[in-house]
Image (tube, rainbow, N blue to C red; front, side):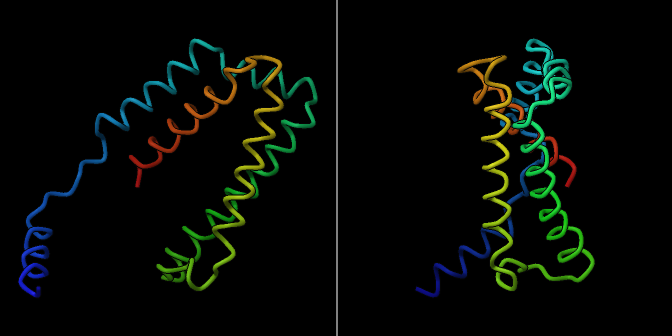
Amino acid sequence: MFLFTEESTAVEKKRKPLTRLNIHSAFWILASIAVTYYFDFFKTVKETIQADSWWFASGSCLLAACLSVAFYCILYLEWYCGIEDYDAQYPALIPITTATFIAAAICFNIALWPVWSFMTPLLLFIQFMGVVMLVSLLG
């Protein structure tokens, strides 16, 4: 039994780390660019903001709260304080961040539903995945 553990650690040491840019991340980034271009994403968001959409404003505030907690975890707790296992020390942070992000996504879907109808969740998901993959390239 101990033999398998030693072999697995030896194999893990020999493995090459995965490159940051792979087919999967390139696909989502290119899909996000295509959605932005073909669906006039920024123009539509600008028009929704100018229409004083309460749902869009709520989604923006919730997304700002979600990103604030995420930056607090990453920048302050992990980089500045050196706490790598911050979810064990502060167990409420990740569920709060997840809940605010889901609420923000619902608000954005409601705000943009009159524009893209049933395509709205798909388009927002593609944009989300493109941003996540782009950020993963940075760090």
